[in-house]
Image (tube, rainbow, N blue to C red):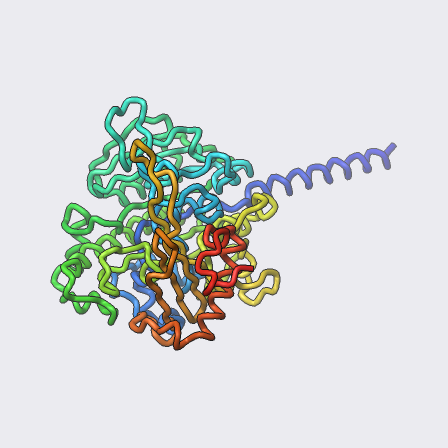
Length: 508
């Protein structure tokens, strides 16, 4: 009997230990915060001018004041070559949320009510859906811009850009404090989880940071504290407009107010004849303001003792040319200032801080983040992005092959119906970036013939000052076109299906 009692006791202890272990594993699931201000170029972070970072890049960083990001970078894995494959707000968000390229995500163009062809597919399992299914409490703050806008039931205005997102289109996010598109930075508005509209009259990044802080502290009992959390924060600045103190905080503007333009716009490809150069002071002021808002979130994690078990990512949806190459369009181009985005990941329990040249594409972000969260088995089948979590953990790993290239995509409006709504998109340009080169082709709408090309040796010409001749660099072009054809075929892109420019591109 005594032996049996001991056996029972051992059995109970064993069950108890297993139960404790299971509970511990549940508690240890990492929290995740993904912060992505809009139109924030990779070069606009102060640490790129500091020892430990400047030797890893062949460009000179912008002279910006970003103390929180500078400290964060020294605690993070910092990528030099993360790419926004279709550097435009909505298409990037479609890829980020779904892990699919624009031809599969449903978001081919910047979303507005005329472009009914462009809206995040409801049938996709997106990043918020996966985290929710894995037992996370999911929250979204700020700019969404991933759906064809529709008016709120109480809003009778003719909606073009802005939108209320109904619950059935939120893809797993339980807590909601968001809007579609609204570019009045000091007079933002948001719809909450229940669809109530809020107008805080505060500079949007600081207001959003305060709401995230409130959520983290659970001040209004808005989250289940027994669950890990997944938070996305889509800040709008430094997205335009950036023309006056209506667009940034005065204290940040004063840092740049009296500095000569040539001391701010230091890239040799800047066209100083453009009037827009004067706006750089407001752009950089917004960058500094975003840094301050980001710092408030980080400070709260420290205060609550959550930093060690929280994956924090700082990124963007695309860059900002700011008069580089003499182009007025700040985005939607293959230029480095447009495609190259910040990508910093801090996870103290798992990641050792270092700088890496991983050529990360936007659809790779979702599976990589899930992989870092220990949810690799929950990555949806058929995802076009690749899980590179093992490379973040160990740069020398052989578990997954490093990508050799990243695709560039530019779409424009296609056919319209009788109501003037856009019902197809036109695949205007495709290109490829490797560790050394950028190649991009543009075609005409009628005959799909080549009308413009770019070929840059980014290694030896980091500011892309010299557009190389295709004819004089045939071997390089042939190699790049082979890679481009393979990648476009892999993602089932329209160029591959229609064999566009097949005299250049080898589709396999």
